[in-house]
Every structure is written in structure tokens, then in C-alpha cells.
Image (cartoon, rainbow, N blue to C red; front, side, top):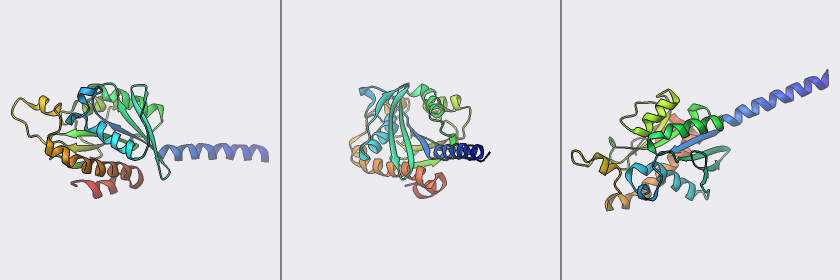
Length: 210
């Protein structure tokens, strides 16, 4: 009987440890389009932020199902960085797959995207909201069947003339934006790490509006 109880409690502890580890795992998704012609476009800021985060922490992306994946470990947390290869309009398909594959709770998801409604370089972390006309967020909402997921919006401003939105979003950064981008990428990387280490509320208080 003692051996049975010891085995049982050992099994229970393993379950609890697994659940604990699950809460320490995060899926960080940068939205963008694959292909060289999109690399330096405003719409690909999600990819660019994740690339900066990976490079500055010496981790490398590898091609996997539905996207490129890199794993970053920080102070007991595991951050799975995902750049979907589905193109922007089907981003939710990759997000849903990797959430389920890695058994990551929805509250540990962070989607990084561009936002026309914010001034260039402005940062805004939210725990829910509409897609705002963004196709990547629209598909994510559709696949997850909820608007309650964390999203980190990076402002790209709306300085385009009438009827030129697509050209602007899929256009490359101007010289002034390029000169400021590295500093903005650094702060964006810190926001993502804070999300995993300090939690979403503390991170919103510290970084929103910066």
C-alpha cells in the first residue's frame, strides 16, 4: 500500500509540474508576409521585431510546420517565437496549430502586429479588442473564436493619401523611420520579455504610450 501511495503521489506531482511548466511557456507571434519583397515593409514589423529579439539573444529560427520557429529561454520562461508562413490573411491557422501543439494557454499568447491608427513607433499592448480592419488579426479572431487574446500593436502611422493605404502598408520605411527603428525595436523586445516575466498588466503600465 505504501508503495502504491508513493507511486500515486509521485504521479500527481508530475501532473502538477507539467501544469506549472505549461504556465511558463509563451507563444509570441509576429505577423507578416513571407518573401524578400516584403522583408522591409511596414506590414512586416511583426517579423522584424521577432527577428531583432532572436538575434539579440543568439537564437535562430528554423523552418517548421506553418512557420519559422525559434525558442528563447529567459529566467525560467520559455518563449516560442513564431513567424507564420501562411501569409498575413491566414495567420490564425498557424497560431491555432502552435498553441495546440505546445499546449500553451490562450492567456500566454502575444500577437505582434502593425497599426495604422498609432503614430510611428508607438507601442500599445491590449488584452482584447477588434481586428481594426487588420486581416491578420481578423483571421486570428476567426480561428480562435474570441477577441480576448493579447496583442502588441506597433504604430506605423497613417501618413498616406486617399486610396493609397495598400501601397503605404506594403511600402518600405522612409529614411526618418529607418533612423529611429532600431531604438523602437529594442524597446519592443523589452516589452515582449516583460510580458513573459512581469505579466500583461504590469507591462501595459510600463510600456503603453512609450
